[in-house]
Image (cartoon, rainbow, N blue to C red):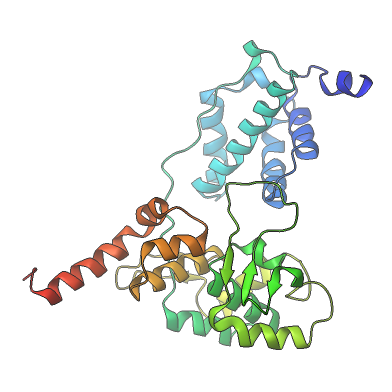
Length: 292
């Protein structure tokens, strides 16, 4: 009863609500949420929940973009704040009439940048052994960065030649982590397994974003230009996932198979990569003589 009373103490201080949310709501993307809360803190210090409204959200968005932050990052930060407020309301820490009004930026750029196969090889050639392994695993499995950074050997089934990207007793998330086939990663993983030093497939579970960015810079691939239908943009580890999906669809792999690999629905794959599948359809129809 004492714990319950403590949990339901009312508060309308934004930073207190963010701190409670960070401590109590455990999810897969803890690191990403931590960075969002760190970014929110300077602006929302001394502010109350009932102060938050659409003009304030727009003011925050403008300030962050003036600092050179992308619109998608701002959207993620405000979404984190909204989730923290919803968490506080669920635990009756804020009243119904104190719930804030949010405006999350919606004009987000489509994440349809990808690397061509020769560019993937160029990245590998310019990478350290650990980043080489990261690139090969992230690309080969179509996985997100943290899933590969945190991959442990118990998730690797050499007999069944499969990789379970989900952790034991992992909290549910909308970022699904499926079981994927090794495919041509089998020999590579067998070599890594023979020299393993601990439980981590990459030798540690550290954040590799900085090293990946350095590799992109060495390979002259930190920013890519528009080319053969590929838009220009900055290369991030997530681009490896997009590249894998793009290449599979270009090679004629069905959308349902690509969706299963990515842990997405076929509808999501169609909406994200539909331009590729439509291009393949046009080629097939042209070959059949139905397009002149």
